Image 1 (spheres, one colour):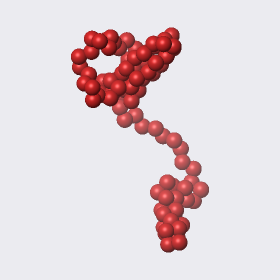
Image 2 (tube, one colour):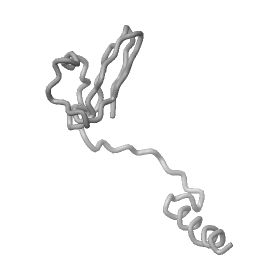
Image 3 (cartoon, rainbow, N blue to C red):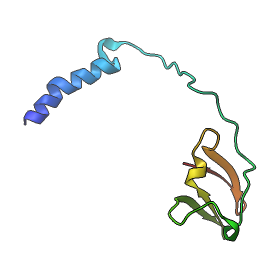
Length: 99
């Protein structure tokens, strides 16, 4: 009961105040650009599974199979300033690999 009272008396009014919902004020959406958009990666190089030398058994991968075709995107290669999303085609289907 004390938790519900605390929530109703303290938390809810605090959230209303912080979010600017009190007083019927209308807020407008004003997005800010925090960083420049990155160019799409559409021609990433791929290596056959048997030829991979830079991936350890403990490394995480994003694995995908589409229409009988498979591919694994190493998570450590999907993180970085230019590698957030890789646009690809797998098994005749357009995909976006992202982490």
